[in-house]
Length: 413
Ligand code: ATP
Image 1 (cartoon, helix red, strand yellow):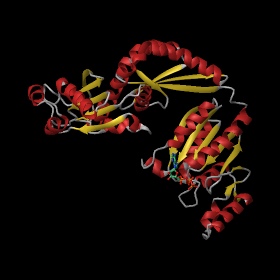
Image 2 (tube, protein in one colour):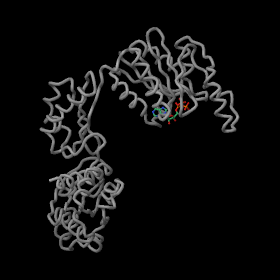
Image 3 (tube, helix red, strand yellow):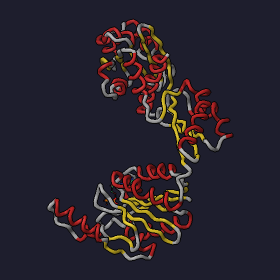
Image 4 (cartoon, helix red, strand yellow):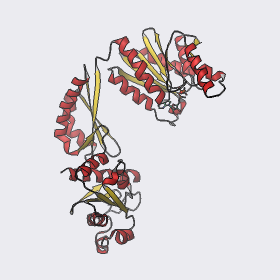
């Protein structure tokens, strides 16, 4: 069986809200082995929703719709489905009573518009909405299933999980095939090189499969397997994962929801070690990231945003001759910044970043995107030179991420 997701709302088409519902629904359908071939977004217009339903019914067995079930005139999903299916909209007694009770309990006058929410297409099965007022519903029509739910994610998700999925599992006897996936997070290798190193693995394997996705600061390698149960799917992923680690393991810092700052925190806490920062072009990004973790006061002591050369010298204590001889954007300055931070904050480790974020200020010798970083772990300092591409924001984000990654790698070894 295959499905199509239709999200309703002009806001979606104007780019005012992010369509997280379709992302969520894609994952949920994949988990039960339903193939999703198309996603459609349509504005608040009955005629266009009807047209979208006709197209979807021509190519999918299951149509899952979210949004447009509210009480106002621009909530057109109910009407669109009624028109498409040729069914009347009839009040559902139980829903009406619940709505009346809802308004009475809050001492708000219930308007005629609010009553509209209790109307559902004739013959549809109501999906109760425990988190809001608009119910959803499921219709079976000419061998197709249409499931409609409100757009508010916190209302829609439990309805999908408690009603729509069990309905689909029952009706199609599916769920025998599950899809599981796992993402590996890669830093320090460009997408092209990741691709080159693991290309042969995904050419030969359709299931489990590999996808490589570039994000702003890192690359995600996503492994996906389809099998009869979660255990076999997980085993398939595990086998492939080992191969991928064999190729690019050095550049992988974590999986799924793991973060660099979280991995660093684990190591620092286990080793009872402390860290401080000295930042120029990232101006606090490292401190911010390192303190994203609850309990970071156990290892993060503080940082100096040494943005100007004056502050690098006076507050941080970078020797004047270093800045004069090599410039502020240099390996020597990055090294001195890390050393001085460790000294000032009396920490075990320190991380420094100095570079040219742009868009102005670059020269032939020191172009925009040139960043040096220093990592001092118990007096042994390693510096590295990087040339990042992209806008000012991207250079800064990439510099911060790479500095944390370098720190993590040194800590781990
Ligand atoms: P309700 O009956 O609870 O008002 P509704 O079905 O009328 O819900 P909409 O009016 O279309 O839903 O959307 C309500 C809100 O839900 C939107 O303002 C938005 O915040 C959120 N929402 C709607 N569609 C989506 C979507 N596809 N992805 C993420 N959020 C969404």
